[in-house]
Image 1: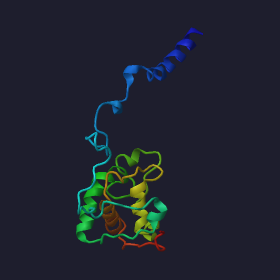
Image 2: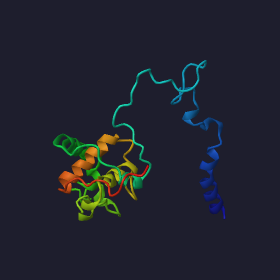
Image 3: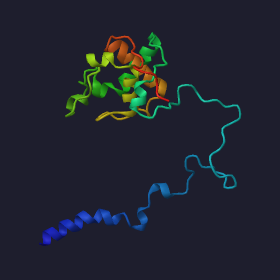
Amino acid sequence: MKKLTLIIALLLTPALAQAWPWSDDMANQISTKPQESVDPANPGMKAFPKRSVPVPGTTSLVKDREVALNTINPIPADEKSVVLGARLYEIYCVACHGQSGTGDGLVGAKMTLRPFDLTADRLKTLPDGHLWGYITFGGAVMPSYANDLSVAERWHVVNYVRRVLLKAPPVQAMMPAAK
């Protein structure tokens, strides 16, 4: 009975530690928070400079993979795009999907659920938006790369996968994009 009481006490100790006054989160320190003004007289986010314009390729209004499926690839699959896509694929995708794209990367080979085979014939018929949506929102075991790759960079990866791994032409949306 003593062992059981000791085990329960040890398991509950971390839960009790959260209530201690010296375990404040680092977020509760004196610092400027994102979108917060450093001037107490003018609280809130600093206004954008006059005549500023958004940088193209940085914003995406796509909310989920279903909408992404119907998104048309705005980046032409030219040599420059494919070379950039290859470099990004090397950095972000090879670990799981491997050089060949078949899911035999060093990490992918050790996974219970193998990464998707990017050379599969089924992928040749799916639109570019499907690939872009998967890179953007992730999947069952694949994480989202929306924070790591810009909108345009994700399209470059799609162009690389389509032209080099699939050896297929781009496939545009199956139906008009939903509004």
